[in-house]
Image 1 (cartoon, rainbow, N blue to C red):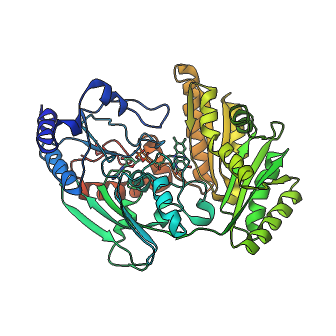
Image 2: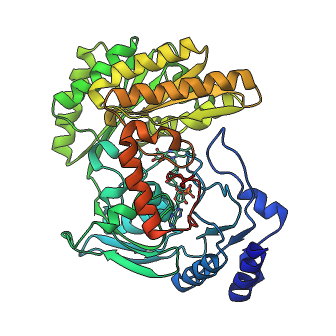
Length: 462
Ligand SMILES: Cc1cc2nc3c(=O)[nH]c(=O)nc-3n(C[C@H](O)[C@H](O)[C@H](O)COP(=O)(O)OP(=O)(O)OC[C@H]3O[C@@H](n4cnc5c(N)ncnc54)[C@H](O)[C@@H]3O)c2cc1C
């Protein structure tokens, strides 16, 4: 078997201790953060220590036509790291060094396996931050979040991962490597290869080094909780805050189902009789923060919201811990939590919230909705049981409909969780047949044998 031959050659290269092949080890890499996705064991899990080793692994994989799945912490929510066709999972826990913090150029250079929170800890003494912050900051890796182009709680003001990736080193399917971008603020040399590989979900190449942009940490922050007895009022408040020309760092929503579940789990003092709450944080220089916080309070009141302002860091932390607990709390309520990230222009948030409610009613499902409302990025979360086949049929119909509605509103299939295997079937709705063919042509130019993360994002020609 050629895959076994490939494994033997990799073992000869790295030593057996960095090539895992026991059933127990392989089972740990047969799934990721995605519910309602198939599981599949790889044939081996490989832990390289250097770019040269990654190159050698890809040359062996290429020789034996063995699939390779780059994997960070496996927290993605689109089935992006499931080794669907067997083969080799390559992980980066042994390539986890912060190579440089350059406080003059405001950049950091990191290896792929660095955890996002570790980077922020390392740059804090310089008064700097790396802003992208998915809910998994303390587990997700720099390369995984780059390949997924993750967003997170601060996307509204600070943007998402792609806005912070300045340069990278990449190993291609044939084992060759190249570097693109760098530390310069300006760089328009040829096609933007850095952007192409950011969000490429492990399908075009393996990221072995990253240069990222850092920014000065905000001097002051103010967090607020706005409580609404009407979901529409919460939706109008989101649009109203932006219309008042305030761009909060964070503007998050939780609906009634989510509030009740989070409160039962986290005891954060959330009002369980509310229809919706907004969690809002403004940051910047102290005078501006005061002014913006006042403006936010006025808009909330205009749309019948009751506002509580966090008085100190402890209260602030409690609020954000509650928001971060949203998904884990919902996940406790049912055996399966199907979480989506359809995104609409933010002016259409109230409409989208209503549509999700109507879909829940139509298919008789419990859907908790929370998410990055200021970005138009909602996370409708369907609480279900994958062993109940009749219910799962309704879940799949509801998911189809949520994506259809989002695309029809001028939105997108994914605000931040990527396409992976979970959303491939919808791609033509957004990109059209020609757009999907462009993806395929890019994939085949770089990886003609579909060795890198096969079965994700771009379907092979059948
Ligand atoms: C509780 C929870 C909350 C979350 N909250 C958010 C959120 O707020 N915002 C958000 O955007 N996401 C969120 N996510 C999704 C997830 O955390 C992010 O997508 C995360 O950044 C992925 O990082 P990872 O290291 O786990 O990558 P993985 O899941 O391991 O991989 C993600 C993708 O990157 C590819 N990849 C990994 N390493 C490399 C490499 N070296 N080279 C090339 N490709 C590579 C993989 O093949 C895969 O396609 C959440 C997930 C969970 C479970």
